Structures are given as C-alpha cells and as structure tokens.
Amino acid sequence: MLAETPTTRPDTPAATTAAAGAARRRHDDAPDTMALFGRLADLPEGPEREALRDELVTLWLPMAHRIAGRFRDRGESLEDLRQVAALGLVKAIDRFDPERGAFESYAVPTITGEVKRHFRDRMWALRVPRRVQELRNKVRVARRELTQNPGSPEPSVAALAAHTGLTEDEVGAGMEALESFSTLSLDAELSVGDDGYSLADTLGAADASYDTVIDRESAKEGLRRLPERERAILYMRFFEDMTQSRIADQLGISQMHVSRLISRSCARVRDEATGQRTVRG
Image (tube, rainbow, N blue to C red):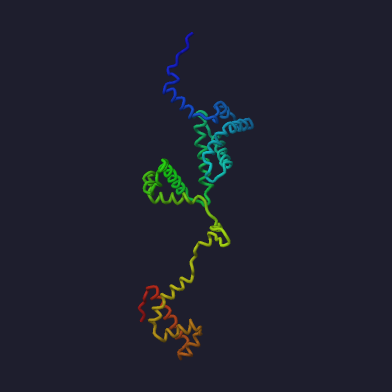
C-alpha cells in the first residue's frame, strides 16, 4: 500500500512557518488538560471537585510562575509575585469555560492582570489616583519604545506626547509619577560623617517673624501720618505699656477719650496698611 504523500514538504517555508508558530504558541508549562476541565465543569461542589481543581492548579502553576518572572526587578520579591500569580491562576481556573477555547489563552491575560493590579494597588508608597498610574505606564512604555535603538536620545516631552497621543501636561504628570513610585523617609541620612544631616534638615519652614517684619513696614507710613498727640498715645500704650488711665492723667483728658483715640488711630493705620483708606469725618 502506498503511503499518502503530504501536500506540504517539511522543508517548505509554509511548513517552517507553521512549525515556528506552533512552537511560539506552546510552552513546556502548558499541559493538555482539556479533559480535566471538561470533568471539572460537570462536577458539583464537593471534595471530588476540590481535588480536581487542586490538580489543575498544580499542573498550571509553572506557567503562573513564568508570568510572575516577567515582573521581577520592579521592587517586589519574586516569591510575592508568584503568590499573586497563583491567585490569578486560581481565579482563571474557577472562571474558565472549556467550550470557549484553550485554557492558556484565557489564563495568561487573567494572571497578568492580577499581577499588574498588585503593582497598581499595593506597591505605591502613597495612594496615587489610577489616572496618574495609567499616565505613568503610558509614558514608561513610550520612553522604552523611543529609546530601544542604541544611541537614541532621551525623548522630549513633545515627542512623548506625539507618540502616546497625550497632552504635554499629561506627559508631565506621568513623568513625575515615574519618580514617585517609592518614598524617602524624612529621617534618611543625606551625608556621611559626624556632620551628617537628614532630609528633614533640608526642608524649610515658614518663619512667623517674616510676617511681623512685613506688618511693621506696612504700618510705618500710616503711623507717620497720624497727628503728634495720637502717635504719642500709641507709643505710651504699646511701647511703654502704660494704662489708659495713666495716659489720660498725663495728657489731662478722660480715659474714654484715650480709648477712642487709640481705636481710631489703630483703625486708620490698619486701613492704610491694607490699602483700604477710609474717609473719616
């Protein structure tokens, strides 16, 4: 009996392409478990279903670990990433419908999404709005794509905006977020040696004395414009700390008159200092 001759020779480009495509689609950690998933779909909740589910998790766990390995060196331990990927695998197994195609096609984006959510929700030292996180990711990917060729210059904000379709303000927010993934303690040492100082030592603070200086300079001109007697009353009251009764006795006027003069003089100086001159009769 003559054997049937294949229509495509093994060494033809079509055959080579098909073989390469099959190699790309399959991995050593992608077992053939369609029959097990078929059984899982037919089993009710109970010990037998749990055992079969655990078996599927064990078979596909190497693939979950491979996906977790793609995210190494991003500030999270590989062991923690594998735990997150395993959680994504369990979710994929529970939600998979064997009638809708291969498990790997469903599981890979499910597990990858779980790992990305982990970075988005757990790895930021401070809570950052999701919109800013998305801008950060777009800018990071765009920078990588624009500098993938050796010798490529660092892309400008305009170039990143054109590449991503974002505005330059959005690119700026994404670039700021690139540098804000982690925080630095205010107690962090910024120098070595006996004269070392911390980050907190470099931060300035508002000095209340500045406000006092501004207030004094603002009041000077108004004080100069006061009548001589009113300037004298303010000086005795606020610089010599004399009581209104003593001032009244010294000037030969009533205490009530002294009180009115102090109130009127202070209001006039305040109005002139704030640019709100008031016409007084």
